[in-house]
Picture 1 (cartoon, rainbow, N blue to C red):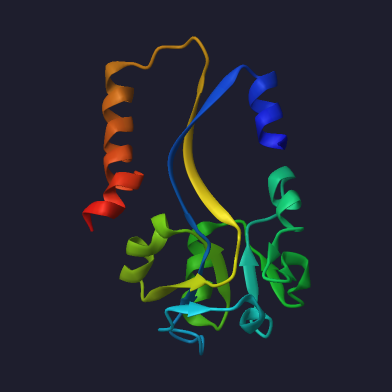
Picture 2 (picture 1 turned 120 degrees about the vertical axis):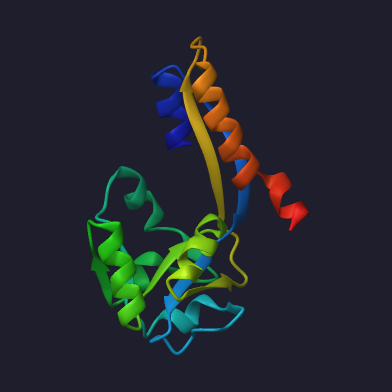
Length: 158
């Protein structure tokens, strides 16, 4: 609802590309590495890494992951650089929460993606544009590439 209100106030429109479940990404130093699925409770002994808080991440603190809230993780670390986050996940037993669109790239860095079971949280990938604004030919071409690679139809092709 907060995002919808901001879009409305700023005269923006949202277009969904794809939707998918929440994943946990861990490196080979984490004992959960290699698992296909886990329950949120299994993450409690490990360090949760995230970006510094902003308006939307503050809203996420109340998310319920099968009875576990983000604020329930007693060990957490805020890092403001994505590459530093990835390095920390690769070299410790820490984890990040993420999505299916990261999986292929993270796998190249020996980070596995584990489905979070009994989790009603869904991640959405979307793009936003100003209403009444026409995309350039180059923007349309770029958007078509993104949709072809990350769109919901791609999962059916795998």
